[in-house]
Structures are given as C-alpha cells and as structure tokens.
Length: 273
Image (cartoon, rainbow, N blue to C red; front, side, top):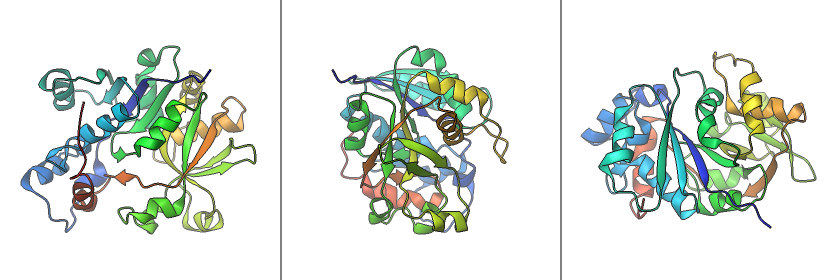
C-alpha cells in the first residue's frame, strides 16, 4: 500500500538579501516595493498575485492539503493573507515562526510540532516546482527528493548556467538512493561532477530529519543548512532517501532580475487555493 502524504512545510522566513540588491530589471512599482523589502513570497507576478499563491496552488494540485508556512517574527503580511484575507477552499494553512534567520535546517525545526509523527514535504517559498514532481514525492511511499537533470533546469532559460553551478549536487547510487550531497560546490568541483543531478531543495522526510537538523554544524555562513543536514544524515546512515530523477524546469525567484521572467511564465497559470 502506497503511503501518500498530505502535509507540506514551506520555508518562507528568508531575509531576501539577494532580492534587495539593485539590478537593471524593469519592475512594476508593486514588484519593486516587495523586492526592496526582501519579501520574495509576496512579489506580485503572473496575474498580479503574490508568488506564494502560485506555489501553494501547485501544492494543492499535487494533492497536499495541510500546509505550514515557516515565517519570520513579525511577518504579519503572510500571516494575514493566508489566515484571514483569502477564502481557502483546498488548503488548511498553519504557521510556525523561526525566531532568527539561522538557516533552512533551523527553519524546518520550527515546524516540528506541525510535522508530528507524519511524513511530510519540505520546499522553498521562492521556487515554483512542477506539479508532477510534487505528486511523485507524495506517492513515493518513503523519504525522497527530486533529482533534477541539468538540461531540464536550463531549458526554460530562467535559471542561467552560472547560477546552476552553485546549486547542491546529488550523488546517487545504483540502487537509486542518495550516497551524498555535494553542497554549494566551487567551480572546479562543479565541473568535476557535472553529470550529477541537481537538488532544488524539495524533499519528502520522516521524523529522522529533525535529529539531523539538530546536530548539523554551522555552515561557513554561520547558518544551519538543510542540504548539509541531509548530507550528514546520509553519510552517518541515519537517513535513507530515494532520488527521483526528473527532467523539468523550476522557477527560481531569488534575484530582482528573475522577476520579469517568472512574471511572464506564470501569466497563464490558474490559482486555486
């Protein structure tokens, strides 16, 4: 019997430092204001809806019902939108607060009570993932991640090759399970492992991930990083994670220059929350 899941945790507490940096991108006044505030999930795109609306609609399309948004202290805009401003028909949304910006592993720990003893999905708030991939994770029956093909991520043209070279890589064994995570490789290491699939930080976990997040060391940036927690857990044999190969694009809303392309890509998308 396939163990389907319906819980998802969306990491939406980032400071948006890269989004605040000026570029020559042509933005609407509302887009510029949200970018200046670093509020990536709330940047209006497509039919002038916040980017997070589209990501949440994709989760609902993928069969997820119970969603926890991990937010920063005082983030009333996200809380108000999804608790009172919208009428939600397909999603039940809860909130968890990350007390300080200490990285994605720390953000996941903030949602420990929401996860309970269930398996759950974890994903970034500034990425729009393919619905088929979300469905695959829902139905995988075990902890898993999407292992993205390099060509698929480059195909849409929204993510350039130089940026892709900085993403974590997945070392997958012949049995289809992760052997290692190569986190934020330098240029030489990225070239040496150019055939490896790429992680876009979307995972199906069970409760074992929380111990990995609690024990992960600080990164050089002084943060507790989720890919590094997975890396340490896999190396120690505490985590067994299946890698699901997928040839598809992901929309990444990390920089101001991303906004026009993401805006255009989402104009034909229908949102139903």
